[in-house]
Length: 366
Ligand SMILES: *[C@@H]1O[C@H](CO)[C@@H](O)[C@H](O)[C@H]1NC(C)=O
Ligand SMILES: *[C@@H]1O[C@H](CO)[C@@H](O)[C@H](O)[C@H]1NC(C)=O
Image (tube, rainbow, N blue to C red; front, side, top):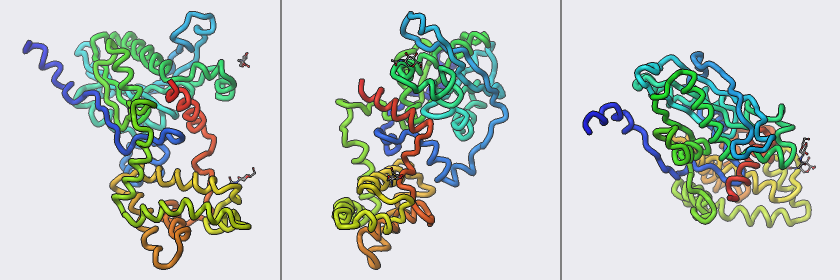
């Protein structure tokens, strides 16, 4: 008994964390925490190791379909992964492997600022691995994103079950290549990547000895989580920050509708909110504000506290303007002064946006 413990003591650090907190990503639309992390939190971005010269990039010839034996299943694509050997104690000492699972975006972006693995690797003499999620970054099947996203048959391979099967294959490949059969693997991910890490531990317990799922709403599914959950927490954030701010936002939705219904109502709203393009419907504005508030709450880092910034401006404007004026002041405080505000800012069809939209439909409709 006693002999088993010491070598596994380091494991006490790692356990399957089920953390459903404010960082649970906005399910219908926004999975990418990367964007905001980098843009919005100067403290985080400046303390980032903005590049890791020790990370070497490799490509694994990955199987398109892990779950069938049709001829198509044996098509392959190149899957990107990155390895930092600097701290690794080597196969002989059974030093562990920390594997970060890419999520809905290019993995080299993650590798730039996820410091957790490098912070902990020296202590454990761990090998650091970052693996890219299929259909993102450089790990695109069918030759190009356009082809990969073309139709139901090509998109059919774009799902989380295939993605974690990819991770299993890459990790086994790495172990084999390094003759590291006895090196325990700890899988790590954040947000959707954290969900993948926890599912991986359940589904491939023989490959991962542990999983660290950070800010991962792993039980956020129809019929399990209350569907009001995400907005409930966003609302709570605002309410706790300022009751009057919460009340103002609450009243603003019907105020926007009321103004929109006036003759020239959309022009009035477009002017008041300095929209880059004229609003076509009040939803354009409401959807933008919805994204802005949820974004602020989801990335409500203490260093910046964007909810406080938005609410501070909304409350401060109470004496000098009406509800819409207050809301606009909140927008300006969050987005800074701009010549105009792009109502489609949160809907630009980037790879992450398109991929994530597809995935949400798939993974949330099991
Ligand atoms: C999808 O596109 C590919 C490539 O153009 C084509 O071969 C395939 O038949 C299409 N599948 C469907 C279901 O349309
Ligand atoms: C309104 O529709 C036009 C034409 O489709 C589009 O170019 C414009 O961006 C839309 N406005 C907003 C705010 O989305």
